Image (cartoon, rainbow, N blue to C red; front, top):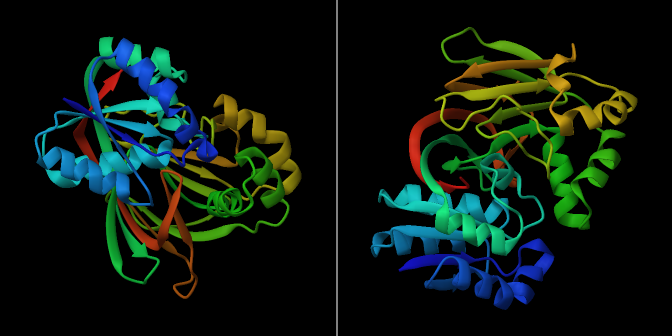
Length: 299
């Protein structure tokens, strides 16, 4: 039987309130399943790993991007051949957008039943965690550093939208100085407002940050947003949502399988964002893992 891992706290807590209707939609469109619920951060990964080791072949994440990322991490860490499904119920939905899965539960449940299975690439990042220890995790969407970490921190602490946080943060943000190495090339000094290591196309609640990214090409799209003024950030924001920003002279774009990023000043602390979470800081090494995860997508 399929297992659904539900994060009742996602979508500002509304997932828990609407779960009976979501469950009804899933049961009518998809079929029988077993639901388990998270109670704290990290539960989804642990529950997914446990279900995979006990023989589950299809695990569905019901929640936002953080829940999807945790479930994917649990599956990958288990080493078992398990398929991931997504039943969206979160505020961001960026990975859902890349997969072109419906946002409504009934349509998404139907897509889980009739969709096809694809093998997608995932990212693996090694970094320094909040306790100062070396850590590793997988990501399915986008990892970044720079202004995005401050925006996400404000979203989580103040409970405002990503767009509102972006506008507030832009006024106070200074550029970040990084040393970046792509594959076997020489290390380069970059001054950026934000650096994104993208496996998928979207992040930040609908920003099409890497419009050319493909989940099956065996490469990251590395997008650097240069040192823009607050005014230029405001006027350019619509281009990031439509994916037309790559033509801007302040934006760089490259493809790579491995990226090493560290602060230009080794004494500086530069926070890291991974699939919408803030697990630690640089230095970090990002590596693509080709065709590592089976995912159900809409036909």
